[in-house]
Amino acid sequence: MNKTTSTKVRPRLGLAEAALKDVSQILGVLLADEVLLYLKTRNFHWNVVGANFIEMHKFFEDQYEELDDILDEVAERIRSIGSRAPGSMAEFLGATRLKESDGKVAHAAGIIEVLLADHETVIRGIRHDLAAVAKANDAGTEDFLIGLIEQHEKMAWMLRSHLQ
Ligand SMILES: [Fe+2]
Image 1: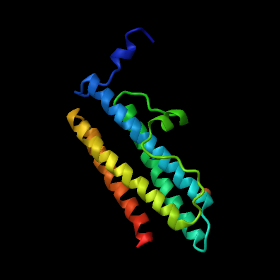
Image 2: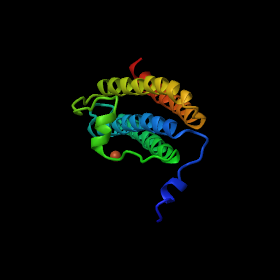
Image 3: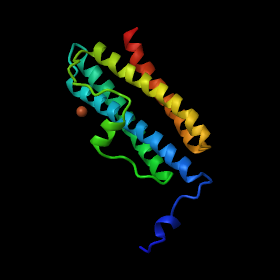
């Protein structure tokens, strides 16, 4: 690799370097949120108890599988705009807008309240992020984030319906 290779292969997407950096930082926080939510959902898939165990065990599995796809897409979006995707627990814990769970909530209703609140935090977070991404003129990331809001809103509805 010669000295100029790294600059030669910078993405030429019609976006300023500063904009790419800002958007990558925003997506890095979102990635941390998605990883936390994935892990919390998986924790509850393991530890849920109660008469409806098998139903909840499978429901949480469906949800963490969807979150697994989402977090992969967020990380790959960061790569697509030329930045390194955060990939360590220390980075995720330092960046996330969500709180870790000790996993001690064991009955489905309590778990669902925790996960619903997290999805709603993520939705509000993305809505906030959209304004900054629009300012950076990054239409691709805007479109991507709008799709993620819809996915989280649907997942939140699935959770919320258990509480009604
Ligand atoms: Fe499992």
